[in-house]
Image (tube, rainbow, N blue to C red; front, side, top):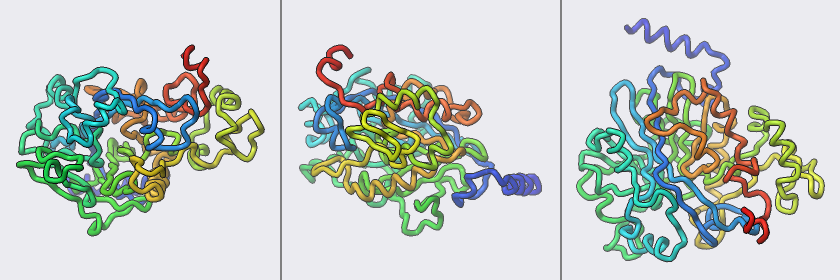
Length: 388
């Protein structure tokens, strides 16, 4: 058995073209299974949208998002964890500071209302007591669900900088005492981490190279992302809210080199992307040139009161995570990427075969397709709004 394991590692080390090794990620044959849930769909309206990224073009003030959650199963031990939970089914029972966003209509749950990850897990035959841990990418309302519905045997894993103040002891807190009561809470100590990938400190969660948690602060202190090894040489990057829209990650020169935009979309973008708001060296007035665009389209919002705690730090974390996005061994999924909503397989299907199935190549440029709900790169006038 020891000989076979050694041969497997030698085989992996000998793969000169296995580019994940260039990030300093150790080889391993241990993997996890990743399955996605679209918990609900929601809409952010008016000023809240501008509190996430910019620019927000006229007529694009409201945008819809999926709220994704992920079931991760460690194949060697069959232990299960959740990475993010989406929102709870009764958002008016959030802490008052958060419930107000729903009563005031700033956040609207579209379809289906009243659903949460607990309902979806139970409907799929996943016993709650089989979930050993929940990992919050961060402590915003659309990721924390309702921890009180999980048994106390389910631990909670959070970033070390996470604000764990709770209501009612702290009247303006966004978390509740029930989020933590009676369960083990682990704050990850990245100061002691001895791994770093693309400049991001990493912790090997299961200790065998199958699932890493990365420190990606900026959106919120303590924000985490994950690298899930789904085959010995391919990964899914669970990006949380490092990006809210693929236009915050793309295009970049390395990404365009690895994944050229399909010809039909490249032609469409010449007229569909507004040169009043976006530019590139080879663009002309009214004719956008995508291939010469080296900078991503969107940036984290730096407006006062934005949902981004530190826009500069968020952009640095995003730059680092985007290096995985530009690599053929990684498929990045962020929690609210509406360009993927109709494209990725959901539970009970697995995401593990993304590379063999060519999923990444098919979907990464969807966001510049005018027919895709992620397209937000030209203004919408009143006539267009009425027609749309």
